[in-house]
Each structure stands twice: as C-alpha cells, then as structure tokens.
Length: 281
Image 1 (tube, rainbow, N blue to C red):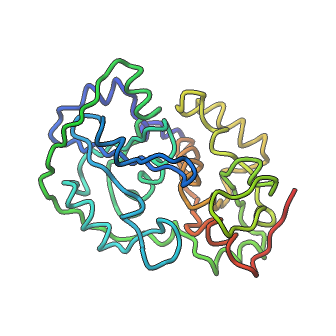
Image 2 (cartoon, helix red, strand yellow):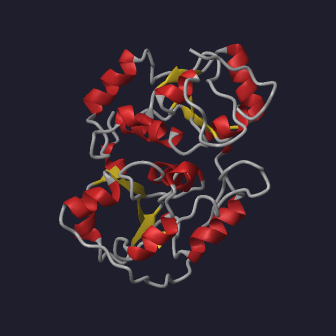
C-alpha cells in the first residue's frame, strides 16, 4: 500500500496557495556547525503565508537535550498561535529540500493533525519551479489546536536500553556513515562516537535524490531490502537529535509502514551518557 499523498509537489502547492484552509509552515533548522540562522533566512524570503516553526523553541526546554518533544499543551499553544487547527490543510517545508521538515511533519502527527503533508524538495524545489518568495509576514489569526501526545510512537531512554539489550526491534540510524562508524566526531561537544549495538545505518541522504526529493517507492523498497531491513516488522529510528530520524519514518510511511517509533533523545542522549553500550565499526 502506497501513501505517497503525504508529499506535495511545488506545482500542487502553488495551485492551492490561496486556499483559505491551507497553512504553510517553514520548519527549517540546521545543525549547530552549519553556521546558518534559519529564522533570519525565513525573514528574508519564504513561501507566501508561511509561518515559522522553531523546533528549538517548541520543545521541552527542561530535558537538557536539544528540541525534545514538548508537552501536548505547549505544542497546542504554539501552533494555535500560528493559526493552525487540527483539521487545517498543513504543508511543511524547509530550506534544505528535505531535512527538518520531516521532524515537524512527525510532530504534528504525534499531536493529532489530521491533514499534514511535506513539500517534496522543499524551498529549493519551489524556487526551481519558478515560484517566488516574499519577505512579508502575514499575521496569523489565532486558532484552536487540540493536542494529545501519541506516546505509542515515541521511545524514551529506559525503553531504548531494553530494546538494545533484547535486540527485538530493528534500530535504524539516520546519521552519516562516518558518524555511525565512529570515524567522525559528533557535531555536539561531549558526545562519544559510534552507534548502538545492533543498529543498522540508513543515512537519511540515501533515501533522497540529489535535489532533496524522495526517491521513488520502488527504489526505497529496494534500498531497505538491500540494508536487510524488513519494514513489516517493528522499527525504531534514531539519529543525532531526533530530526533526520523522522526522514526514515516518512520514507517508511510512504511505503505504507507505520509500525514505527522514534527515539527522541537519539544520540544527543545516548552518546552523552557513560553507561550506554556503544559499538564502532
């Protein structure tokens, strides 16, 4: 079963851009070592009507970890102020093509959005199609988003320890091969290098075309098969801080597989602890 309608093309979004029920979200975020300011880039040019979703602000700031999931009430308050309700047609994009938008898509789903799509190829695809951007912000009309966190799709540290020990779940790590193997240093200070025992490396970039769009379903299926991943069995995804792990979840959902969870603490948590088991290749 294919669920490709999760994605929307630039031309499809352009055709809907004046729909009063449409809510466009710029979910851009960059790694700390990228030296990019996502909000400043949003202010200088974004898709008409887009509101900025800051994953560092809409987060549990008491967790001690980067952008972990906020409470349901905090999420509801933040997106209501953006003018978003549960039944709006929501489209998320980012400036990289496909990076942090998948995380925002997943967050909206976790908290109960009914109609949430991702712009395939993001802002680069929008511009490549010849569509313009604006630096004018449209003040949102506050709405009412009712949020309830779906804990069944989230894995916390103690459960992650159990899953690693039991080796009863497929663990897919979206980081690049160098970080997964421990040959490259982590971008955040204080992190040990390597990966969780039993994890499989599925770099998020391996699921995308060079332009940041998702590879066709047939290629995604073949890629997972080549990595000895069985999408019909339970899967937990992880990465550096829970962002690109969402790209694997989106790819799996494109193929109709939803027996998936995300380890929200990801390597920012696992790699910073002294008693979590780590392997290096």
